[in-house]
Image (cartoon, rainbow, N blue to C red):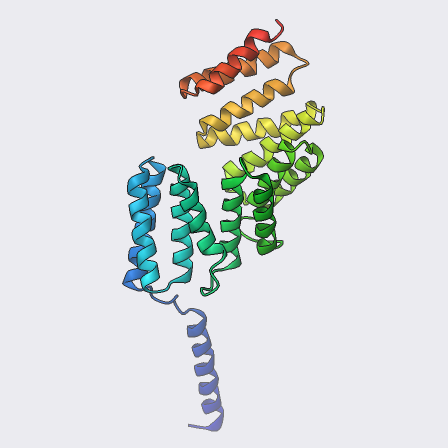
Length: 281
């Protein structure tokens, strides 16, 4: 073989090696990793079905398996899932313990995204009774998240909610608008939350006409998702945004009332009944 073909052969081999490296498959997961993911999937299915005791069992098994192989990310996922179930069961202290096990564990290499999600969930869990603690956790989530992370939009949505419920509608509107821009297009329910918060802020700022468009868009998203409670909230707010048009307001509140009755939302049905009784005809 001449030197030129030999050099060509070497080049082809190097290029081929590069192509093989570029097309290499991801590392094969261990049996324990596959089983842990399976337990998490089963747990989520049970959680969505409202079967919290069985969901708890599956997530506990997922955590045990993940710890047995020190799979950092799988441990974080299982703890986040466990916190969700404990909150659903009204066991807040145990939920917070799981979240703190992600936030404050120095020995494991949890990603900033996972720690940010844990901080966000902590803020959500305590905000009803501890606004200062919620704000502190939310600031921590924000710092961990930075300008880009998977829960950035949710952090901004909670900031908007806390600002609104603390009497700061201008700040709430700004955060809600930022949240809508930060959320993934396929995160329909969270995008609807951002739109609904924008509508609420506009109503609080006494610019109800500006609330109508975001609330109508939120209603479309919530209907597509079949989210009954959110649909009720959208219709309720649309009625408030239409206060200068009593007939239209009554129409929205009547629809909200029907949704509440069908969903066995007693508090919602009582509220809309009072609004309809006092609304001008």
